[in-house]
Length: 228
Length: 228
DNA sequence: TCAAAAAGGAGAGCACTGCTCTTGACGCGG
DNA sequence: CCGCGTCAAGAGCAGTGCTCTCCTTTTTGA
Image (cartoon, rainbow over all chains, first blue to last red):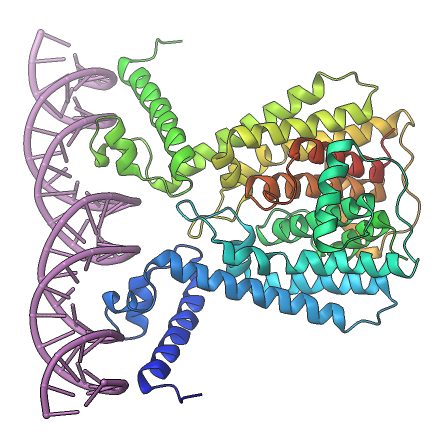
């Protein structure tokens, strides 16, 4: 393969630096980051940025995809570090990793899971990395089913829910019982809600020991799911 | 009492109309509503708005408080309409009312429970109306405890969590067991997560029958809490 | 009753934003 | 080595929040 031309290499470096500077701005200014400010920080003129990102939304999209991947990596590697047979430990590690990442990158988390930016529609590139944390969680349930250490909850689901979840299960983990998937999704929803509440300051005044609270609440969901 | 002067009456009407127009803009443009656009819609000049709201953030705050109250009213009245002895029905009604309101007012919901607007810090006036839905939910648990139809889950909470929740319970419903409060807050967190996922489009492609899904998932939390 | 004071609207202006267009300078492949 | 494509720079447009000044209208107090 041919060595990349100088132009191509410089261009890649520029893109990387723009994203780095933008990420820094994101941390302080939140979602309303300004192209002009980024350009100023790089000693460039604002119009030059448009050579690399056709619009502000495209820059945001790039940052969003990177953030999804960073979060996915954090969750997956934390979960992978736990003994495969320790299902509850894997669950807790994955949840905690998501929270730790969110607390370390609050602005990026807000970009991913906060209210959608008004004029902005997330392109399809984002749905795959966006589902990685959820897949990690559901993977724990699948492993537990496979070796019989999780018994799926009995009781029927209402039909439309059963059908929807059956279709979903067929797509990701064929054979996963719908009732178990429902509880896994409840856990995932809970995780998201917990992190959002904490990050958006909604339990600032009510729960001082947020670390212990988080662990306990995710443990509660592990109980609901039936993790041993 | 003296009749309000013409000025005062006109002023009140102006404030109301500004908020109404702003609410309309909110629905289409989301959180980045523009004072100038609101002024244009009213046939005013932008600087005139500042006679009524000293800054854009103050307008947003007014809208936020109104939205919190609207949501609180919706939840409370829906919950109050159910037979007092039907604890699960009250829970489901409250959850459903919150979801219905959110679906009917997505932009306002995003303002309340989405990512915080970057430069904006919610003033203290907002914390009381913000907690009304949560209090409604916890009130169901208190009633269930009072007449013995809910038995608090046994098992110890880790100490810092127990202490935090004991302090919280002492503030709102003295006598409510900490372990039950923990589950109630899990339900509240779940409710918020469910609505946010649905509203922010995170289960668009995965769960077509969102209505039934919502009901089932809130029912799951009712099970966890132990609602009869 | 009548002038002073307060309140509100209109307009200009400042600094900022995203984005477009044009003008040059530079690297690179034929 | 020359022309094509890439890129930085600057001017400019329409929009933003917000301030300040000017002017009219309403309220108020002696």
